[in-house]
Image (cartoon, rainbow, N blue to C red; front, side, top):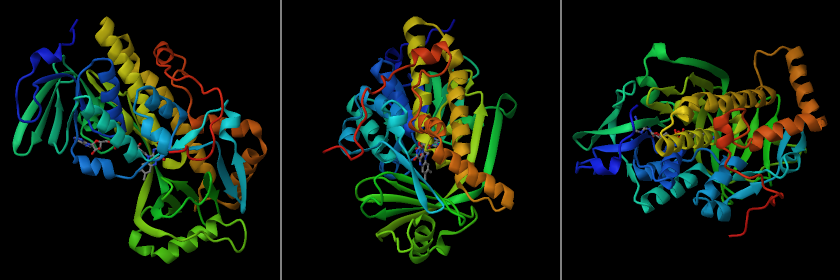
Length: 437
Ligand SMILES: Cc1cc2nc3c(=O)[nH]c(=O)nc-3n(C[C@H](O)[C@H](O)[C@H](O)COP(=O)(O)OP(=O)(O)OC[C@H]3O[C@@H](n4cnc5c(N)ncnc54)[C@H](O)[C@@H]3O)c2cc1C
């Protein structure tokens, strides 16, 4: 049996990293890669993180913002939640709006006090980067041409370019946390992986606005002209989306058209109008559902968007990425402490159970809330009837709320998953307002 090496005893000077060997090479400094590196470091396991973009770019990319209770608890319990606790905004409910009427889903009341926290993904990234660098961790930014090798054998390594130099780093394991377009998944031979994909027939036109929040809680609105979402990133930056043609062009959407369309889709009264703010970013998000199976190939483990994509309707992408690496970190810790590979062998099955549950939830929310151009009047009636059933049924609202706030990591029937339980359920509900600074 190959016993993973003691990385620190094998270090040499080189241009990319001071090491020629590490225990875990992590590709990608997104939420998955950085959180994995952080969790491993807390257990005394060494890793090097490789990132193709600059630190400034990674820390400035605005993406997700809805953190499940499970993610929040993990950040807090591992010492990287302090700024989130001060600046994040806890939401105990969301609103589902259709036919011009809102219906509150009381997340906390329905889930024994669990809630979501609105805290922007790039802030999570900043906190994790600061924690890793502060603890002497290695993150190599601006690396180019990264490739992964021999992960089907016992001597995997990573090759990459730093400036004009090609470097290699040997390791025990490689974590492919390099997002949907990364190199790791594509390095696995086609015959060894099965990919499941569905491209949805619409996109989301997203804007970031300098304005105070539009609502106390997120609003998911279904209108005959299409879906829209009112979300927030901070007290000064708001995130609004509206369903659009996936082939549309941002140039077709001058500000006046965006506001008019949002007003139409969101209004509950004839004279209702969103307050205007400066729109400082516009973009179109493609809606895709994707899963690769398995998530392990020899000593290469995929995590986060590298292994799966969900449509953003369920706000699950970042949260799944964090859940994956918690399971992976625990399995690696088990490997390095007891020598047992059992948990690593179960990694893919345990992670995929949560992934498919999140896919189904995201699919349900997407199907229920979007306009489908090919729906006949019967299907339109069915969609409306389903929304009404959710509005009327505490049982359906509970199912929605449980999935939305995220199940505890141990809520999967598997030994590995049970050991992965890391959060205690909060005993009491948290307030809906932003916590005091
Ligand atoms: C507009 C938008 C809104 C979203 N909203 C939400 C939300 O509200 N809630 C939610 O949970 N999720 C949301 N998501 C999804 C969420 O942002 C992703 O699921 C999350 O970023 C996945 O994290 P990750 O670490 O797996 O991948 P990523 O964040 O994609 O990180 C991968 C990293 O790897 C790097 N990389 C890629 N290739 C290489 C290479 N060859 N070598 C080295 N580095 C490489 C990339 O530069 C990147 O930094 C949203 C996504 C978008 C686009």
